[in-house]
Image (tube, rainbow over all chains, first blue to last red; front, side, top):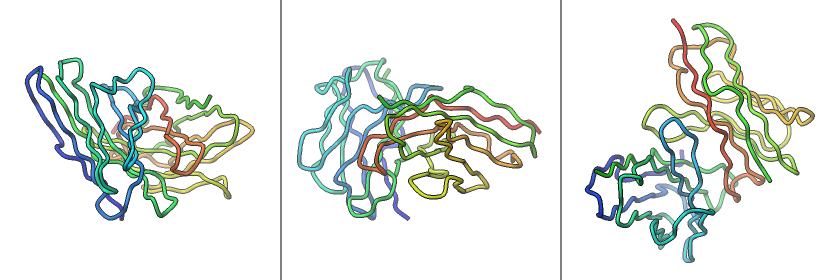
Length: 116
Length: 114
């Protein structure tokens, strides 16, 4: 079946560094991908909608300069957390929508980001 | 505005007992509805979905849910709980099958007692 791969699954880095998370659709093309953030014991909050070949659409309250999204191909979207700080530590999950089929979004396994 | 409400942040049942996780939605039009399961440090796995047609939807792992428009509900049930069912469950909705962003409920943690 369709699979969405997220990499890395876990990353620890120092405060002030930038971290890039990749989201790939492995066997389908995804015009649209979504990035979510999940704090411990909480639900998923949509951060932004990533659109292939155009600018991402950010949800209210999400800093676009802080969370850079690039969707350069139909199978890859990246989220870069710039100048990360401890408060950015969270679980980030992406999902992708199959452009051709009308199936629900497929979710990646998430990335655990810890900023020291 | 569209919203999803899950009643009960934590539900605990005995192994073999009925599982009932509640979900209500508010939307100006009937949305597409989903139930997802999340195991620790993992992404989301789709349990089942309702789009159109039959209101009783069967999913994986013996779960099912019934769409009740009059009650704006989409409760998740399983006749007999298994230890492996312990996880976080999210109800979600979108106005279209996958073109629109998904709105998630706050989640319900299901614990299974031996």
